[in-house]
Amino acid sequence: MIRAILHWAMRGLERRYAYDAAYAHHVINVSRSAGIRLAMFPLVAQYRGPKPGRLVWAGALFGSTHEGDCGPCAQLVVDMAVEAGVPVASLRACAEGRAEEAGDVGLGYRFAMAAIADTPEAAALGDKIAESYGEDARVAASFAAATGRFYPVFKRGLGHGQLCAKLRFDGAEVAVTRKAG
Image (tube, rainbow, N blue to C red; front, side):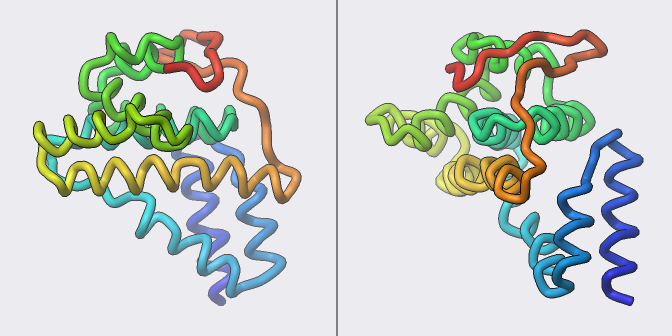
């Protein structure tokens, strides 16, 4: 029964976003317990912090997912972000290596990339996020920076990963640069 519910939820995600969740179906079939844990992961990954800082959070999640180098995962994050009101132009600028031009989305993106790369810029960007939106926004951006990479890495481990070469923004396919900042 639990497996059926988990599969049903994944099929809903697949239909809504034209996303292939074969990896999740595989996990659910292999282990009900693992499927439940996979379904619970968004409880951590989707912590968004305060509403005024949501663009920063979205940029950090996109940056982390994009850095994980998974085309379908990065596309899913883009589609969900656009659905939530994140400006398409800001996401596209980040994907094309122009994050400095992307406002708060770019701030989050740059923060995630710096945190992942363990550069000194991470602390300064984190301070800027906290000064602008509060410490809670830095926490949310940190969750996003850490967790966005989960799905691409997890999928590669299961043999379901794909390289990120193009993403769709407003119907147009755009060649993206990996680990752009």
